Each structure stands twice: as C-alpha cells, then as structure tokens.
Amino acid sequence: MPIDHDQEDAEQVAIAARVVLGLLRLQTLQSDTVPFRDLPFVLLAAAEERHRQGDYGAERMLCDWADMLRDWEG
Image (tube, rainbow, N blue to C red; front, side):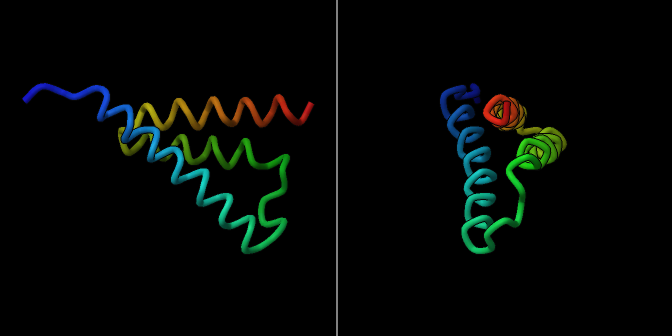
C-alpha cells in the first residue's frame, strides 16, 4: 500500500497541535504553571518525545515553534 504523504503530514500537524493545545489548556486552568521563558524548553522536551515515537514531522514543528518563542523573548 503506498504512503499517503498528505495524510501523514496532516497527522503530524495534529500531533504537534495537540501538544501545544495541551500546554495552553494547562496554562488556562492553572495560571503561571509554566513561565514563558520555560515554554521553549517544554516544547523541546515534547519534540524529543515525538522523536522517540517516530513522529518526525511533529518533532520538527515543535522545535520550530520553540525557536519562535525564543525569538519572541528577545
């Protein structure tokens, strides 16, 4: 059976989005749970876990988003 790369990409985006939305939910339910300066590191830890699970697209997105957050700090 051929690999459907569009479907695979959509799944990777959904995985990465779930991680970020989970963090957003946690921040909303318990304010100041993760300080802003720590968010990039939390995303990088989540990226590492996605890598272990074989979700390389989600890993790349989470790393990119961590970089973006670090840029916003400066």
